[in-house]
Image (cartoon, one colour):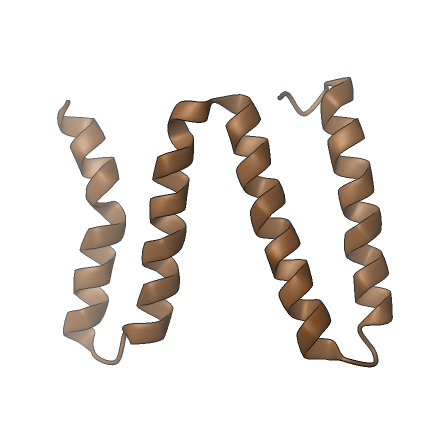
Length: 97
């Protein structure tokens, strides 16, 4: 999906409207709407990248999972380095191939 295509506008416009409506409604229960907004952006970005090329979807899912886990489990410098290596490992393997 290209940024200048009609399908991008059809996909992007409702997404922006729903996102801003939830931001407007989030004055009551901020945590619930924030989780919904983050989930909406995550799913929409995965769909967008899947339209571009389906081969990259496992890579993006891997990076999302490793980055999420690193935020949860990084407590010291060594764990940060380990997660950084895990995050960059697919890129390094593509460079050597």
